Length: 137
Ligand code: IDP
Ligand code: MG
Image (tube, rainbow, N blue to C red; front, side, top):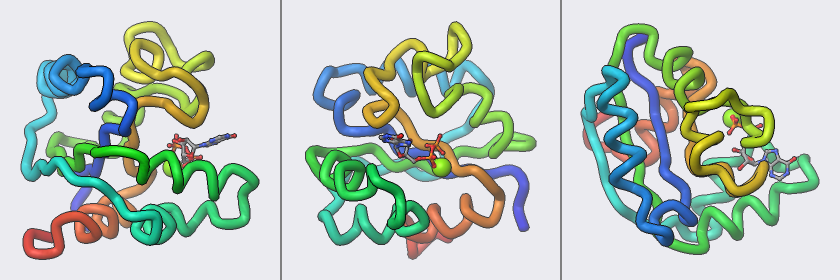
């Protein structure tokens, strides 16, 4: 399993607000190299597949509707220890709990609209990269 890639998705409210560029700048300035990138919009069905692991959670339907509500940017990022390093850069799930300077602290609006996704394990990074870039991963 590769330990040098992670998958990320910039969430709809960021694209709407015009904050994509600042977030990509922060990612690059922290040593991540962009290996794949696309602007796309998830269907509800795709959002449900992507977040299937959360299907028993009370926020699942809401989360899927939100993630399908507008364009997102999907990216594969490379760096040593990419998964852990990127989770540190984005910060805690709830922006209120995220450390100062993290992407979620800077841009997250709520525990749901928290600006950005980052894979939580190498195995999931690989699955998630394939989900969006089946020809590349
Ligand atoms: P993560 O994105 O930090 O890995 P997960 O627990 O995997 O957090 O949850 C996936 C996504 O579901 C979060 O990024 C957030 O958008 C949403 N979410 C998580 N917990 C809640 C909650 O308690 N209420 C509403 N949405 C939530
Ligand atoms: Mg997660």
